[in-house]
Image (cartoon, rainbow, N blue to C red; front, side, top):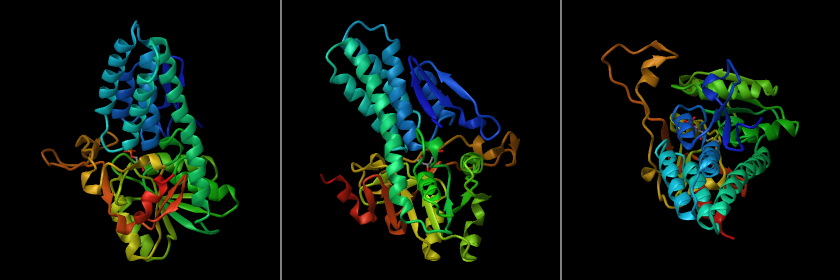
Length: 339
Ligand code: MRU
C-alpha cells in the first residue's frame, strides 16, 4: 500500500486524518496544497515527509510556465521555503527538499530541470521502500519467536512511502515465521498508535493490542513487554534521538526494566550537523489538539495546555539503531557514514 505517489502534475496521498474509519486518497495539485496536507497531518511520518516535500517541488516544476532555468529555480526555491515552514523536527523533510533542489540546480536547462526534479522525487520514493525493507531485514534478526514488542506512534507504511521502519522490523519478523505480538500505544493527542498502527497491523493479520500511553510502566513491571521498537524524526551525531512525544518516557521505563529499546530509522534521519538532541528543533502544535478530543472539549475553558509534538531520548537509553546499513550502538553512528 503506497502512502504517497506522484502522478503527472498531482501528488496522491492517503488522508491519514480519516483513518481508521475511511481509507481515502486525496489529490494535491500544488506545493501549497501539499504544505497544507502536511500541516494538517494528512501525511506525516519522517520518511513520508521527505517524499511529500520532493513531490511538491516536482509538481511545481511540471506545472510551471517558466521559460528559463533561473525562473524555474526561483519558483522551486519559493515552494521549498513554504514546505520548509510546515514542520521543523523531521530532518527527512529538509533532505527531500535539498535533494530535489540539488537535482534542479544541476540540470542543463528549463526542460531538464522539470525532468530532473520529477526523477529525483520518484527516486526518493523508490529508495525509501528499499531502505525500509533492509531495515526490516536487519531488525528482524533481533526479534525472537514469541516476543511482545511495544511501539509508539506510527512508524509503519503510513509514515513512509511503504513498509515502514519500526513496523518494517515487525513485518519482516512476522513474515519470517516468528510469532510477534505488538503493543501499540494510543499516542495522544493525535492517536497515531490507536488509529494508524493498529489499523495497519490488524489488516495484515499481525496481532496487535492498543494501550493508553500511561499504561506502559505497568505492562513493563508485569513483564509483559520483551522489546521496544520505535522510529525517529531526527538523530543527532551523539545518538540522541527525536521522536513522537512520549518516546522519552518509554525509553526511561525500558531501561529501568532492562528491556531493549531500539530505534529503527534510515540513515537519512541522522543529522550529523546537529551534535546533540538539545539542538533539534521541537515542533509545538496548536493547543486545540489537546483541549479537544475528537471535537469534544476535555479541558476547562481558560486553562492553558502544552502541546510539544516530539521529545528527545538521550543516547544512553537507546540499545541500538536499526538502519539499512546495519545495527549500531549510539556511540557508533559515525561508522554508518564511512565508505
Ligand atoms: O507527528 P508525526 O505523526 O509525524 O510523528 C511521527 C513519528 O514520530 C514517527 O515515529 C517518526 O516520524 C518515524 S516514522 C518512520
